[in-house]
Length: 172
Image (cartoon, rainbow, N blue to C red; front, side, top):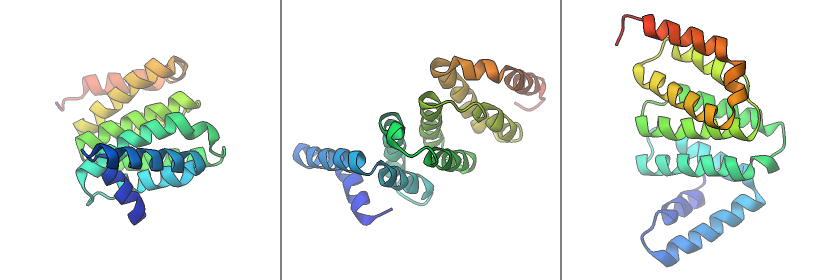
């Protein structure tokens, strides 16, 4: 992540209206002219687990919005790369708030373009993970069901198997 992006991110959260407005204008223009760079910067903030939790959380919010607004202008070959990064971040994240932000970004990506392998892939990962991941996965299933019910239908056997295994598991 660039130092300039960190400064803009901080200014976007400023209580000073003039500073925040200037940062919003700069951020919007940058995203319009180079969405890939903006998405890369947001992902870099999220990857920095030692970074400021507030910056990481806000980057997650901005990432979901950026996926919604700008994924249609990205080259087709970039989408799988972004999705792979999101999945990697989701699998490794321990902070519950950041997990929620990543869950929303994953769901938004699935809402923008079909992603039929998302739920089966995550169901396989979650089966052996801690409860917070299971809760995040179920939240993702809920979000995907709102935006892409066809993906739920396509994954119903995987989801049914996951739920049956989870419900019959002796662990809390």
